[in-house]
Length: 111
Image (cartoon, rainbow, N blue to C red):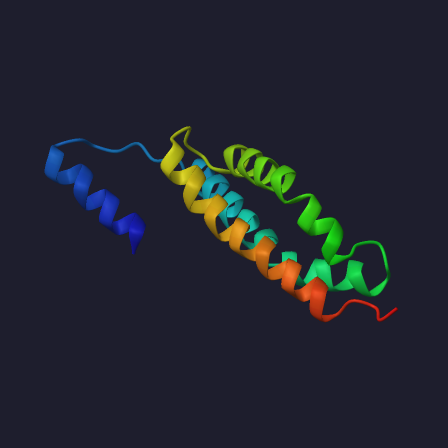
């Protein structure tokens, strides 16, 4: 649907687009991979907490570093250099990190 929309926009401007399928698939798979890995963060956290490598205290202490790391990863994974796309990817990643802290707290090993 999005591809059809952009082709129609090119036609209204009088531009004949030269779209290469390789570029389209590279963009598509890169975004699918980025969001797919992002949404697995709570599951990954669950397993690391259950085997004892992470705990919620560590994640809370590392929150500032996580913000910087998330924005760096978002900058690498987004196809354009603008801040809007980077924030659109980093926002859900930050929310999922906070959710992961909650998962780590709930599933922590009782002492």
